[in-house]
Image (cartoon, rainbow, N blue to C red; front, side):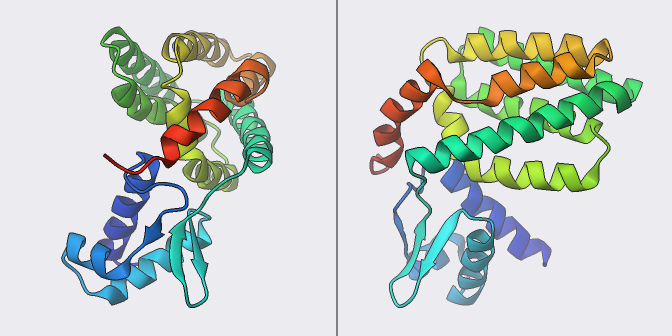
Length: 220
C-alpha cells in the first residue's frame, strides 16, 4: 500500500470513528474524491480496504455505506474485545520493559489531564494511546494485530461510550487499577480489570443503546 493510499484510508477511517460519516450513511465516491482532491479510483480502492476491515459495506450496484452494527453484534464484538484486551494485559504484566512501563504511565497521565479538562474528545485520543501501550507491551505481534483490527471496528462506539455521564471519570479510575496491576506484574489482576473495563453489560449496555441514535444523526 502506498503512503498516499494509507493516508487516505486513515482519513476516511477517522471520519467514521468521530462520527463525521455516520453508520448507514451512503459514501459517494465523487463527493469523497472532491473532498480529498483525488480521482475516484483511489477512493474506490480505499473503500475496498475499509470493507475488508469491516468499517464499510459495499453493496452491488448500490455503492458503499458505513457499516452499521446491531445491538447483538455490538455485544458479541465487545465480548471478544474484552478477552483480547485481557490477554494483552496479562502478557504485558509479564513482558513489559521498563521503558514500556514508563510509556504506559505517561499515557495514563495524559488521560488524567484530559479528564481534568473535561474534554471527552481529547480523552478519547489519549485513551487510544493508553490501550495501544498495553497492546505493545504484550510482545505478541499476532495478538496486537487482531486486537487493533477489532478496536478499529469499535472505535465509533467506544468514543460514544465516553460521552455518557461520569464515564470519563470511571474510565480513568479503571485505568488506574490496570496500571497498578501491570506495574506490579500481576497478570491475572490486569486481565480481570481490563475485561471488566471493556465489556459492555448491564447499565453500560443500556447507556450505549440509548446513545446510538445520536451516532446515527446526520452530521451537523
